[in-house]
Image (cartoon, rainbow, N blue to C red):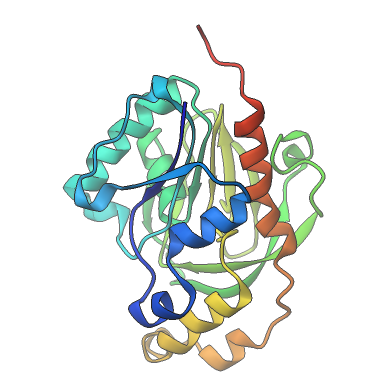
Length: 239
């Protein structure tokens, strides 16, 4: 059974040269080898869901609402994997694409981007969740997104949010989406703030003040390792 990191985009070139790319950060957070990277943007073929033990979908500078052909194709594959109860973890763009594929709605956040460090608060339902159970009631996480899940898919359990972004995490069966970035280090998000300072200023945001924030991202980062253990230990799926 294959374990996949589905690549849907890349970090900014200057940051990538210094720290590596999204899939590198995710692989480090998962904490064990054997995860195969499949680049959806260049049309790499995905295996049938029956041959897959678990999937992490990366973030991307792309926008779900643009309906790029590669993204539409990936959404269809994710629907099949979800139906087969393959454990899926979508991050940022992956979170949005997963929600969109399963019947939710994605679009630009009406209040603009959420960038930098954010305090994420768990819902009551998160206490019994296989990934979120046992985490602090609130924790800091790295965020950088212009679009959001505006409406969750039917039947979804909302797991986390905050005053700006109510849908920071959700579960639907074995599919989990997180809007925040568990794979980002403090250096990665501060690098983004520095490189995007001019663009953020156009949104009325000051990159310097956004970077001046507590940077203990331990709780958020732990989700990747928890997911890897769940995949490794196996999840009951229909015969």
